[in-house]
Image 1: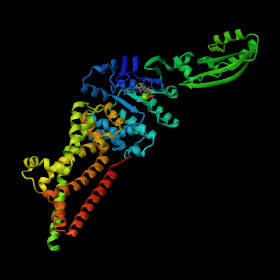
Image 2 (image 1 turned 135 degrees about the vertical axis):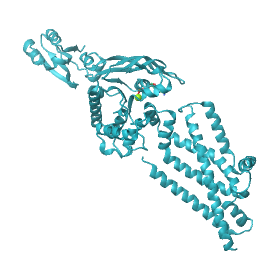
Image 3 (image 1 turned 90 degrees about the vertical axis):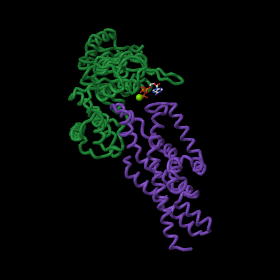
Length: 325
Length: 218
Ligand SMILES: Nc1ncnc2c1ncn2[C@@H]1O[C@H](COP(=O)(O)OP(=O)(O)OP(=O)(O)O)[C@@H](O)[C@H]1O
Ligand SMILES: [Mg+2]
């Protein structure tokens, strides 16, 4: 649905910041694609390049089969009407009521007043704000404002929604409800969502796919479930905080065990004790559920005579084992 | 002192002042607001950056604002005659009043328009708005309360200038104050004109505040 091909962006200025350095991304129709990165990585630049709020220095942006960088100004405006966007600070018009804000894009594409009213009512119902139609943005909470932003972004029935840190100004509980709304819109309307965030929890909660951006370059991308299954992926490493180093007692070995998929459901530690006479002392641990998958990581101290055999047994069970040097 | 004679004179002078200020305000808004809009959109980081045009407009506006009103009043006499056919009376005073207030209001409206959150303009662009739609549907409505306050300030300075214009034959309360209060030493007339001017200024400010508050949904 969105193809970002070899996009470079250099901001001119005294220092000439290269914000994007040859980014390639393919965002399949119907997916929720997250771009994760730290502050200054170029996330905002990237998403603003997708609807050409920022014009790439080179490369192309193909949305729904159309290369946006090749369009005339009028064609670009028409293309933008088919791409919804939501913002970190909501960007609602203070001079308009909730209903008038949602009607805004409909005015731009030339809906007649009666059709506009009907569509606005439908959208406010979709985001659960029918009772706030006549309120002004200043009378709403952050979460409610973002719901208005979402209703407005979807008014013209776009196939694509761009989200620039849409939940970064919200508390965790409100964030969850907004993400749930996005997830349900994705499922119900087949909406393709490209979102950028610096929060791992957002990726964990709703993204099918993710790309990690560092200093203007994509350093990793793929399906969230596949990346998490690879314990050495940046995503997996970012999800699990690094355990503190632990000095093993004489004869003991400290190891980090990562369980994914079926290995998370096996009673492997008790097997170690039974088969190899190993004492496993758990030092630290995390269990995360991502989508419908559970992933766990344990730091253990192993004691016994058959440690090597035990480790190869674990690996045979699909557990990733890293022994602390 | 003849109050029977003075009463109608004061009344006529007040009407003249209101007429001068009203008509010059109308032309000031008509030309100053578009100038203010041009100033922000042609700016370097504006919607349609045209640096040379911005520089020229900025220069003209600064020129207009740096000229003392009395000098402007005299300097543009030929222009005034060309436009309204005379250089005395309230009608003639409207020209220098508007000419001096247009750059003033252009700067004031530029400042108000600049206060509109860049994010709103960006959101409008992301929705596919053209320049005209951004001006009409975003910039102006969002800055309306601030523009109303700016208009009140402009009207107030026009009231002050109109009194000055009156001193060189422009009519209105300033003219009255000069003729009776200054040339004939009738201090009471002077006091009455001052009081009337103060009342007008207070009224305009009060109405401006009221309207701005009613329009603001922040
Ligand atoms: N308009 C601009 N002019 C010049 N440099 C810019 C501009 N916008 C961004 N940059 C630079 O480009 C780089 C990437 O910025 P960007 O805003 O895309 O990062 P980000 O990943 O969104 O960061 P954050 O999480 O802090 O929002 C930074 O070094 C930034 O200073
Ligand atoms: Mg950013």
